[in-house]
Image (cartoon, rainbow, N blue to C red; front, top):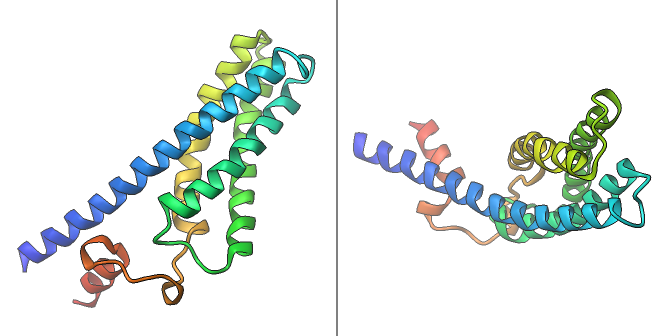
Length: 170
């Protein structure tokens, strides 16, 4: 019984670790997309509109992130309701983008730090860390919810829902 429980706990941990690693990889690529677009915009076409530049960069990175998280990170949890899932994803990303943009606003308007480097650090370092923590839990618990009838069954050692159900039934 203890061995079986330990194996289930280990499987849950490994599944969570896989999700975190994939989410981190997707986030890394999205960060590069967001950062490149943001730096390009605030150094050129939108040098006088840093908040708008942050929003534009965030939207482009968000579209990439939805596709990558839906079809790779949380593929075992996605539902058939793409519209609902996308709307929730966009809502959670709007909140995350608000966190990042808020950091840019605090940096620029409250602290008076408005150089390209200072604004970049506020939006794409500090803001990104805070927004990433929020996004991971939002995606995991609200956006990508399992609709088991539409997905192929995972092996028991890769299906955290089956493990959790079996543990609670005992």
